[in-house]
Length: 193
Image (cartoon, rainbow, N blue to C red):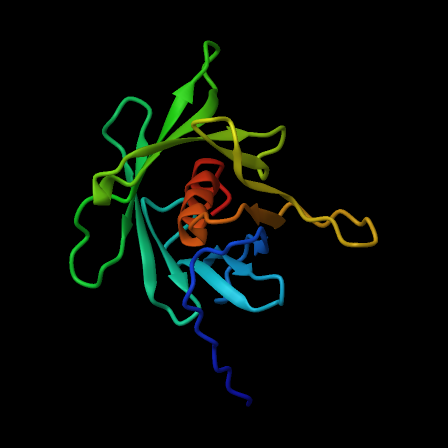
């Protein structure tokens, strides 16, 4: 059997727009999670939820299995919120981001409020807007600028792939692992992971 030798990537952001393919399936048999491929078809990130779907603790890893974020659901609040801890090796420390649901008048959530940079004491806010489908969203900064967008993948010949195959477009100078961590929370909220 052939062995797979993963290539390690050092940069988590780029000076140009990046396009990723997100497959909402785990590479591990009988496991829940997702796998993220770059534009060259290489696996970049993975989430493997060995326990069960919609777990209260999920790990975002790179291809080598190094944990980048630990995402924890905090249950004892009115609407629940999720905290993402950037993995430093030994200690979780302060969360790198917090995601909270913003509820509408009729009960459903309208959007997600994201605060990042808590671990470096430079908080910055984003909004995650849920598009018409559970698998589509936009991440928007304070100024209304698009930071990242996730939607169903369309092939170059115009074929729309299944709801478990997505395209994630990340704008320049945005931390890819952070965007992926936010996408994991979005998947957990919509019961996709």
